Amino acid sequence: MRNTTAWWIRIPAGFFFVLGLMEFFIDSGDKLAIIEYPMAQLFMAFVLLLMIAIELILQAVENVMFQTLSEEAKERYLASKSKSIEWSWGKKIYQKLLGSKPIEAEGEIILDHNYDGIRELDNKLPPWWVYMFYATIIFGVAYLIRFHIMNDYDQDTEYITEITLAAAEIEEYKKNAKDLVDVNTVELLTDESDLSSGKAIFETNCVVCHMADGGGGIGPNLTDRNWILGGGIKNVFNTISEGGRDGKGMVAWKQSLKPAEMAQVASYVLTFQETTAANPKVAEGEIWVDPHTNTDAMAVDSVKIKVEVDTLEFKETIDKEGTVIE
Image (cartoon, rainbow, N blue to C red; front, side, top):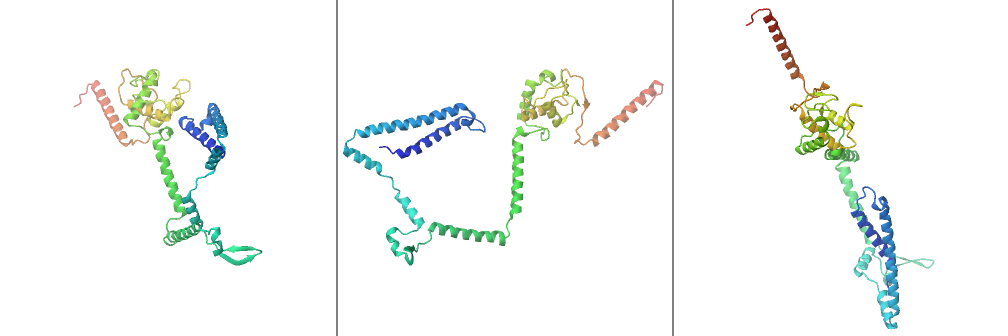
């Protein structure tokens, strides 16, 4: 007869093996495929019923074949089935770790104590327990020397170190995970790959209103210094994300573009600054000056220009009166 006690091992093992393969090959996101897809549940139910049916069929076939054997063959077959695999090396290791005397040798360690017929054996402590006890002593001595004599780090220092490392890992993750960017963390992208991706997005979605060279059409001119909702990477990113003025501005693109894509197209839009469009639209909005830019040198130049303009006007007036100025 087959080993009928093994079916409860074979069926669960086979079931979970098939389940593991299904979960590996089916992409179901954060949820398990068997939870996400009802068809997966039906499939696994079919697999379970099929495995049970196979076990029943094999058992029935074996029973039929067993009945066809002679009495002598039946005895040999049953004897072979009753033999179990003995791990002699495992038993030796177990006995060594246990450290107990076999029943035949218990007379050597029996004590004189007798409590209502109950005798006491002088068994040694199990070696595994003794070794673990020695290990705890060694650990305790090492801990005492390190933290109480040599004054190594304490719990406060360890906590601060862990927090610092975690913060650094979070910053590194945010730096590499571009889709986590928002209006507060967006930065101007200068890599050729980012600008190339931004150009592709612009040519797909934006040229209808702003023209391919940024000169403007339905939308404003992107080549001048004037901005309706503010310039700079943060303002441009926010305008692309949230849209322009209500009723007459650009639609919000945050539902269509990922944050990384909006950062790329915003960076590409800023490359139009100070370029010359083929047919530029009249400037709209106000000239935007980056508040983080040093304007001291610009202030000196503006004074100089003002003086030169006033001087030219003065010369022109005198010339009209007929006075010759050298």
